[in-house]
Length: 114
Image 1 (cartoon, rainbow, N blue to C red):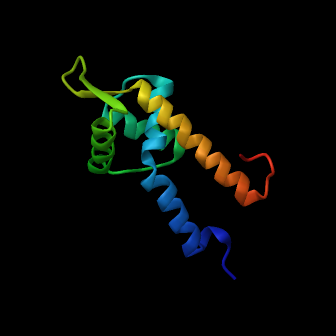
Image 2: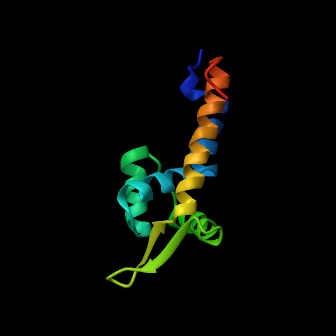
Image 3: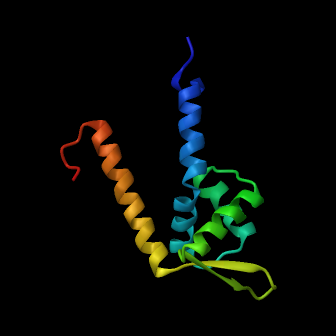
């Protein structure tokens, strides 16, 4: 009998949570550390969340975040793009966390969710 870690459903869940909402992880890192390049972001994603992502996908996520005014791109001291979380990005990040918390509470049968 296979355990939960080898379930296709569990693997899909991990893929969705780590890929589809990568912007939450990026926002968390930028909120805590300030401006970072894509190379630095990839490193932090791997270190803090055990998420390995391709640079091209991370650029896509950052482009979408920038288009929505969640992050701002500036040129760093070495000429690389450095991303900063904007005030709107902080607000949307916190709203996203609250949304997820409420859903987890509902799944766990907690009466503390609103």
